[in-house]
Length: 124
Image (cartoon, rainbow, N blue to C red; front, top):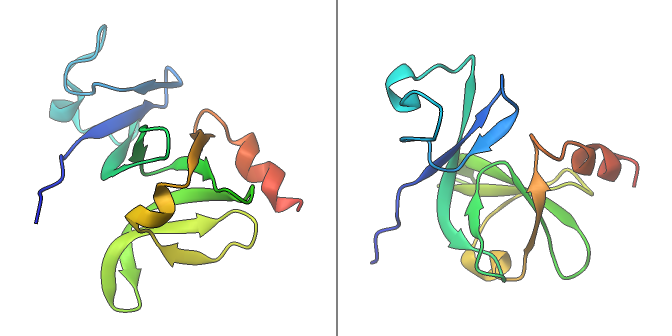
């Protein structure tokens, strides 16, 4: 079994930007030392990549081959198994995430920079 890389991104609530290298981003203190949840929201790398080779992180939104938008959720229980979960933004149903389904996804945005993607699908 291959180990997956452990990586994070962070949403800076004050500056309204995604930090892609939160260990030492330009112009920021080392936010790992601060662990300030009032300022930063952590997004964990799932170890998977979408059909275009983009790394899949929690809180990212993807579109599948049928035009349905999916939100990547955190690790949680699904039928007694611990796994990353995905939520259909069309139906609201939650499913386990697997590499086969993610390989058909294309990146559309994230819940912080693109909240309109979530609001738009609620009208469907």
